[in-house]
Length: 90
Image (cartoon, rainbow, N blue to C red; front, side, top):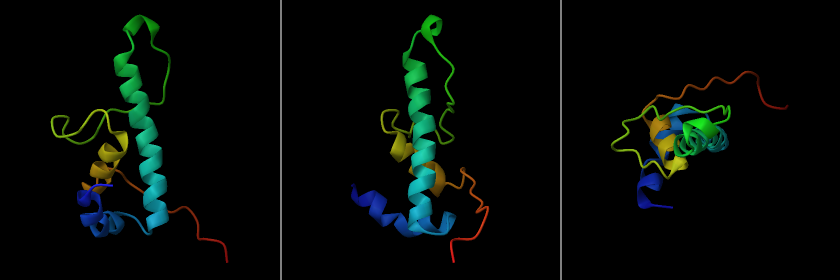
């Protein structure tokens, strides 16, 4: 991983409640972004329905080919909301 991600780890964890939650939120968002990238590369006549969403951060600064990096940038910017629905196992 790049030095930048490790440098921003504390800032990313402030947006969620644990490292494990951060991984799960980033993974789900990266899948959505990956579907969006795939949909953008497909000709309009051949597109299928995907659960896709375009990046919420500036497209100029976002690297289109790295959905995980885009997801982490969105989490750091506070664009991705997260709410714990229940407490952990006791």
